[in-house]
Length: 81
Image 1 (cartoon, rainbow, N blue to C red):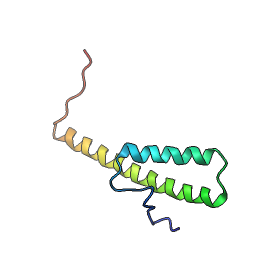
Image 2 (cartoon, rainbow, N blue to C red):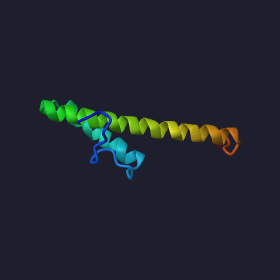
Image 3 (tube, rainbow, N blue to C red):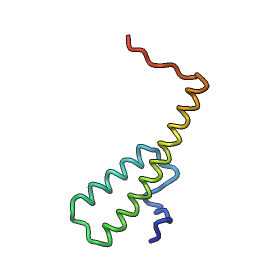
Image 4 (tube, rainbow, N blue to C red):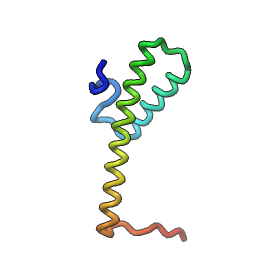
């Protein structure tokens, strides 16, 4: 499996950030168990890296949106009462 191909079972355009993060956490747990055979571990690693990349891109987009909103002064600092 090529690193540039996205596995349909792992990286899905319809998934939310939280769903992708949960899938990534599941992959990490299965790999940390040490019970995966080599080929399954390599597949899990590839899928995990794909999910990580998509999650990082989502976070970067969110950060950019917040920065734009701050520049437009549409957000105000939170003040605890």
